[in-house]
Every structure is written in C-alpha cells, then in structure tokens.
Image (tube, rainbow, N blue to C red):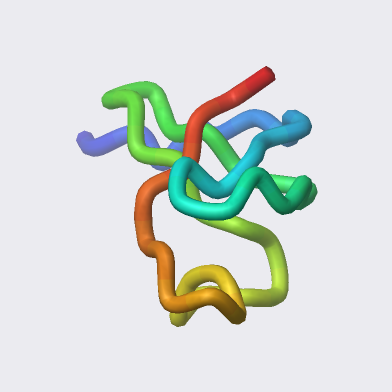
Length: 49
C-alpha cells in the first residue's frame, strides 16, 4: 500500500524568493498550497525553510 504522507511547512520559490505555505512529501517534493501551477513569477522549484 502506498503512503501519501505529507507535512505542511514554510517554503520559498527558488527563482524569486517569494514565501509560500507548502506541502512536503516523504519523497522530498515541495508543492505550494493553493498554487499547484507554481509561483506567479513562473518558478516551479521550491525549498522548505
């Protein structure tokens, strides 16, 4: 059975530095909450603070 565990965290866009609430999955994916298409600047890479 697969686990879809994820945790909420604070994260930032690696392109512009804008802060977001993010979900971090067990495999390290970081997805902004409410902005599944990425940052308004066009960035799609995020890291957890």
